[in-house]
Each structure stands twice: as C-alpha cells, then as structure tokens.
Length: 224
Ligand code: SAH
Image 1 (cartoon, helix red, strand yellow):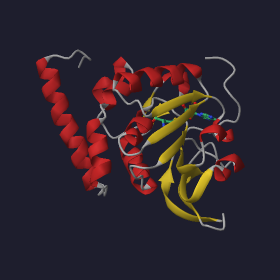
Image 2 (image 1 turned 90 degrees about the vertical axis):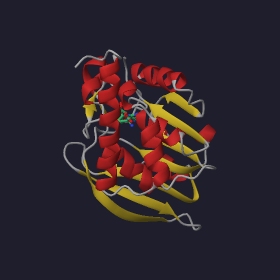
Image 3 (image 1 turned 30 degrees about the vertical axis):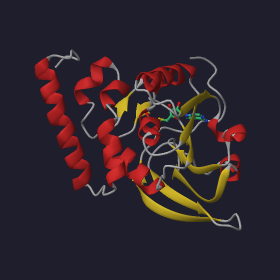
Image 4 (image 1 turned 180 degrees about the vertical axis):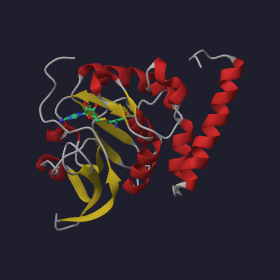
C-alpha cells in the first residue's frame, strides 16, 4: 500500500480507523472524550511515509532519531488515566512525534511539551500547526527540568522510561494534580504509575500497568 491519497486508499483508511476505535473500546477504553480525541487525530500524519499503512495498527512505530511513537492503546489508556479537563494546563515530557500532545490538545486548555531532539521538536511543531492545534507549545530542552516558567501544571505526563520521577516535575505539579510516568529501568519493562499530589504536597502512587518506553535521558541532545 502506498501513502497516496487515492479514493480506494481513503476507503481503507476509514475502515482501518473504525476498527482502530473498536479495538480501543474492546480493550477497555471507556472515556468518550478520549475516544473522540483519538478519532479526531490522524495518526498517519505522525509517522513516516513508509509507516502509513501501519498507522492504525495497535503498535508502537519507529520515528526519527531512534525514538518511537507509542502504541495507540497505551496513548489512550494514559490519556484516560490522566483525567484531563478542559481547564487544565498539561506538561508532557517527550514530544516524540507529537501524537500524544495532539490528543491532549483536544482535551485540555494548553499543553507544553518538551523534547530533547530538535529535529523531532521541529517536526512535531509543524504537524501540530498544520492540524490547527494552536494550544500546544513545543520546547526543545531537558524535560527532567520541567518548564518552570509555564507551571504549575494540573497534569504532567512523562512518555519516556525513568527509574525515578525528577524532582522538578513534582515541584511543578499543582496541588491536587496528577502525574503519570512509566517508572522502571531503561531497558525492559516499566510500571505505568499514577501519582496524585495531595494538599500537603505528598504524592500518592498507584500502579496501573506494565509498559515499555524508550528511556528518559537527562540533558538536551548534543546534535539533531
Ligand atoms: N509522546 C511521544 C512518544 C515519546 S517517545 C509520541 O506521542 O510520539 C519518548 C521521547 O522522549 C523521545 O522522543 C525522546 O527523545 C524524548 N526524551 C527522552 N528524554 C528526554 C528528556 N530528558 N527531555 C525531553 N525529551 C526526552
């Protein structure tokens, strides 16, 4: 299959899109706002041309700089667990393709997303602009430092594996806020963990499911 937008291609794509949504429902995604956001964001625009045929398969796919766009089910489950409301300010660490940021853009007031590779940040920024998602700010930098000038955030989502939550992120989480991150070793399986910040500032952790993410690497990438 080619990436060309032929009529036949568009038909296949509509079918694939429906199956994709059905699959998410079957796997337990219930939040209709989350499902609608996944329906509205064209995942094929976030992958390379050679991956377009696989854009609606429920799997992670390679993107530039040796990174990956997450599996749609994981994006949906994470978005659901984040419990995003229309008034929320959200921080994402690890922009990657910009897909998760695009989903969040449909649900929250504003998104700040940080990526350590300039190439990925630039590509994501232009995709998001093409889709008219003007409430996302993509920054190049080290996400382990958060984005102090833009905080505090109602929700923080880390989309790269980390053995522990960087202190700057818990500091930039508002009281009552939720932080979601794949906690565990860089090589192997992590536990997607949901942290809720109480009024005393203490975090309550809840383990959600096993996931596999590329590592969170401190520092901005030297090249690319
Ligand atoms: N959310 C992305 C997928 C994330 S892949 C999507 O929807 O496509 C993880 C991303 O985190 C990679 O692009 C990687 O470069 C980035 N990353 C890793 N460490 C980082 C850091 N310290 N700061 C910012 N981005 C980081």
